[in-house]
Image 1 (cartoon, rainbow, N blue to C red):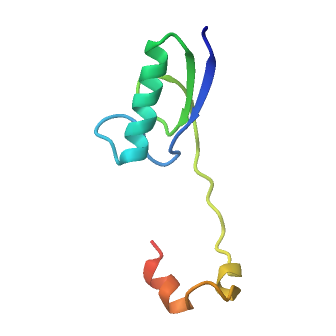
Image 2 (cartoon, one colour):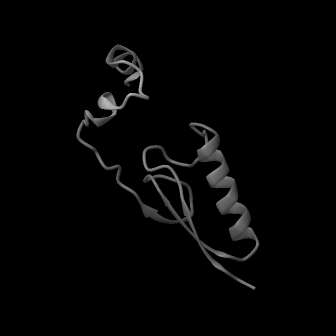
Length: 85
């Protein structure tokens, strides 16, 4: 029985080889495998992501938010700034 399957992959990096990481490789291999079994697979991912039926995603830029800095469970501001990328 053929199914219609949507795979939501990375919006920032393409899921084609050479892979940026495990998520990209897993998404690519999953889409290829399901397609090979005859399923209708649509991949929602960054542009340039393989030969799939592709719906390009555009990353959403979010404004900085100070609310985590006021949470008592979060490390001090100095620890947050050290890990910001």
